[in-house]
Length: 301
Image (tube, rainbow, N blue to C red):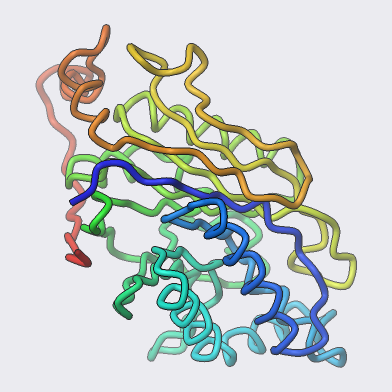
C-alpha cells in the first residue's frame, strides 16, 4: 500500500453534448489532462453524468425523462470510465449518476473504477429536498470503505458530508481519505458542503477531497446552475496548513485542482496532534456510545 497519492478533484463544467461520442471525448480529455499532471486518484463531481441528457433534445428539458435517459445509459457510462481507468492507470471516481435498482427504485450512485478493471460503488445516503421531492431518488442503505493500493477511501456524496455520523463510521472502518463529489445550485449550497468537508476532516483527522460541478446549463432542469470550487482539506494541526486547506480552486472555473496527499499523516495527526478529536470522540456521549453504522470493507488492492 502506497501512502502518498496525487489527487485531482474536478471543477467540472456541465456542457451540452450532442452525442455519446462527444461526451466520451470530453471526459477522455479531462482524464488525459489529470494524468499528464501526475494525478493517480481522480474525482469527478456528483451528477456529472446528467449532462448526457442533452443528447435527446426531445426530452432534455423534462426532469423525469432526462433522469430515465441517463439511467438507461448507465452500462455505457460505466464502460467508458472503466476503459479510461485502465488506459491511464488511475483510480477514478466517475461522476455520480442515477442508477435504477431491480426493485425499480433509483439511487444516486458513485462508482470507483480501478486500473485493473475492478469496480465498486457507494450510494448516496442522505437525499436533499430536490432529490426527495422532485426526483424521487432514494437513499442508499449501506456504507463502505475501499481498500486500494493508495490507502483506505470513503465516499460521502454532497449532502452526506454534512452529516457527521456517516464520515465517522467510514473513519472508524479505516478510511484515511473521503471523496466528496458535489453538485450545488447556489453559493450557499457550495459552502454548506465545503464547511461539512472541512468539519469532517477536523473531526476525523483525515483528508477530504471535494469535487463540484460548475457553470450554467439552462437547457437542464436538473443542472441548470452549478457553483463551487474543488478543494483538498485536512485538520489544521501540526504540519498542516493553518486553515486546513491544502488546495482550493477558483470558484466557477472549469479546471482540475491537483494536490499530493500523504495518507500516512493521518496516523501522525491522530497520535501526535495538538488535539485528538478522533480518539476523544466517544467522550461527547458522556459514556453512552451511539450505535455504530455497519461499514463493509471492499478490498481493491
